[in-house]
Amino acid sequence: MTQYRLYCKCGESNAVRIQQAGETVRCRGCGHDMIIPTLRNLRKLSPVEVRNGPTVKGWTPLQGWLFALGVLIVIVSIGFIFYFQIERRKLNLDKPSAAAMTRYYGDLSQIGLLDAWELWTWFEKAPLDRRGTPMYLVHRDRDALLKNIMLAFGGFGLAGLICVVIALASGRKWRNQ
Image 1: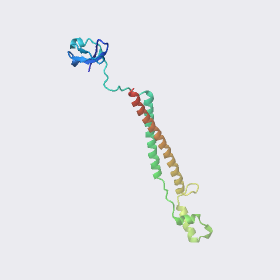
Image 2: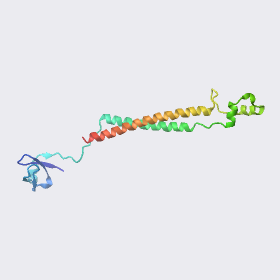
Image 3: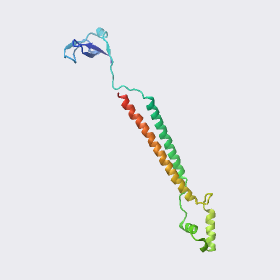
Image 4: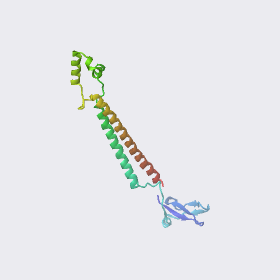
């Protein structure tokens, strides 16, 4: 809505709207009654810039980069966390039965022929890695490693989220100035 400056005798500038043409208003400075000119004469006055609320300024390049980098870090971190969680589910962490473990760690000179045959078939079927370590132990070590990697990516994701929050919070602060 267009407004115009109407100056009083005291020198105070008063903003008046087109709809007020021909009316009387009171000066904000001295309280003197002023008659607003007709529409034709009102348009000869200097216009007033009217602000309809806070001005919205764009983000600075730093804010934009901080926001984009933060979002990228969060997305990549979430992706890696999901990937490593799927990898952890593929691991077999079940420990072999107690009987097989006692045979494995027990004194081999004290077992009979039938027990030796069962132990041999168990070892033959038991999943071992190339160094002869039972796979469930290898999987437990890998599981611990994957948990630590997921924790690290969780920290990166939190750092990215902090970048996003800083970009958004600083944007609001700078827009209102």
